Amino acid sequence: AVSGAPEQDLAGLSVVVSAGGTREPIDPVRYLGNRSSGRQGVAVALAAAERGAWVHLVAAHVDDGVLARVLPHPSIGVERAGTAAELDAAMRAAAAEADVVVMAAAVADFSVPEVSDVKLRKEDGVVTLDLVENPDILKGLVAERRPGQTIVGFAAETAADDAELRERGIRKRARKGVDLLTVNRVGWTQGFESTDNTVLFVDATDEVVAEAAGSKRAVADALWDAVLRLR
Ligand code: CTP
Ligand code: CA
Image (cartoon, rainbow, N blue to C red; front, top):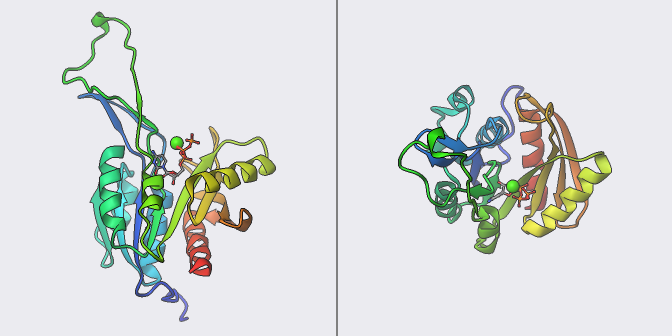
């Protein structure tokens, strides 16, 4: 390949990538959220586009500066989905047409079933939130997988050491039924706001099949390399 022009090894593939964190409303001014910036998912979308794929990016809450990198982009279509329920609907529809699905979004595990139409006030006393579990979007996508479709999940795990991280990754890959799980270690100072990332890739052989460290773009390229080896 000419330097600066990545090899078009994903040419002809249609891919769907989710990115960012969902927010589950509590009342008109508050939500349950998480620390995902959307950087890793957007890097996965950009890498795919630059390697020749058609990309449908489903953006949950992605930092403005991060989303600006793909608005506009000639081969990336962006759709927004704020809550887990919206993301579920968007991913199901988009996955029906896709060769590869990458679920990089950080989905809130729980939501508030009865969202208040008025702001909750202190004078009404201490608030207790009764939460319900959100649908597992990835499990649903795996259950409705198209023939030949490759499905990739992400897992951000806290772990005491590399061995625990690996074991957690292998167990989660099996539980989700995905073809490939990208596992990274997170903590108070690791994983979220940083521009760099360190990951393991686990596939259905229950082995760590690749590792990557460096920029989120380098991790994204390693993900696509691993996907191509599975197809
Ligand atoms: N995921 C999803 N729907 C959910 C929760 C998670 O699709 N309701 C996806 C994420 O996008 C990610 C993968 O599942 O690709 C793993 O997410 P994770 O939060 O690690 O898994 P959980 O099954 O929610 O397990 P945990 O209890 O460890 O949070
Ligand atoms: Ca979770």
